[in-house]
Image (cartoon, rainbow, N blue to C red; front, top):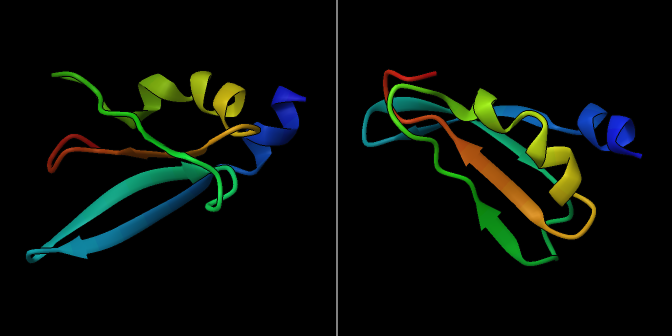
Length: 69
């Protein structure tokens, strides 16, 4: 089950205020959204095991802070 969810993690970018930000996204956008914010120094990769466990019940977004991913 978690392997299937892990395969559905999308790796995306968004342009915000002149910066290109990377983020991971998984789950159904119609479900409640959880935003996972990493600490310093780290990146959204720290959540690579957690995201599949949440994605069946939530819409999960894990952005990287500028310069961290």
